[in-house]
Length: 360
Image 1 (cartoon, rainbow, N blue to C red):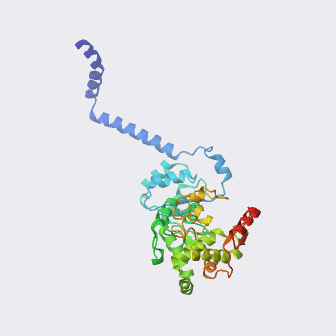
Image 2: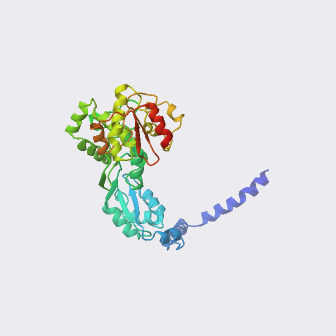
Image 3: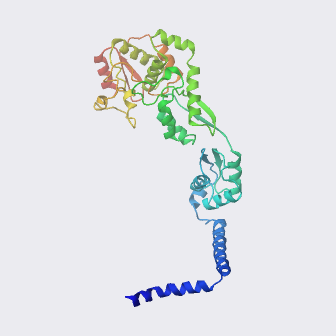
């Protein structure tokens, strides 16, 4: 056993004796040489010209296309570099980080939404990131968009992260009339006015929400609020009813008539039975709702529950709001839309069924 152990340990003893015979100075020189060689090879690899075939298809097809990259507060140089490589702005994350470190740029790259070209020089990219380039972004929110659709559109423009926007919209209620009611999904729903906006590229989620809600507050004048009170509607109820009218109607001439139908049903205590509130519960809209859909248990199901739903289901435009304040002077109780979106009205349920058979 001892002999076997001696055989195993022999090579180790020999190496130890060899190093004991070497001077510390010699060992230090060899170590330094190895480290310098590694550094030199690494530097060559970092600064070597990139493989020209890398992402060649993307570069050829999008050479003239502008690339928008959003740098948010708190992002590290490594995170920024990885994003730039992923978007084909630069070729090497390692090189970018190395340059940032040796030039003292770490911690100085500013948040913002930047416009880059494909395969930019690192120096040009740093120039933008160090100055905090901003630009105006214009976006349009159509009438009838809900919070989820607004979030998706703003994310497409790289103004916000949709999840961050939706999270903030759950509790965003800067005005007294926006106080979040029970069972409401988004407190901001219905109060982000549909309009064309222009914002700086580094606007925060909160700033965008404040701007859009502020536009609603400005557009719904004191005179309009007085007219709503005369109809026993709060601003909240006005926004809720207008959102239902907005989502039920495709053509402007139908807005005041549908508003009149809803008022009459509310007066009678009859369920509104609007498909729009059911669609709000679905992940994807349906052209035709099923009987099973009308049985979904939710306060937003206006087939099962009389009165208004817990809150607005979309952002109504000014025409829909005005239609609620000035409904048509008719006496209809039912309506059905044909495949082109035109509404047909009836006074009785039998008349309504005939219209359904005729147009649906």
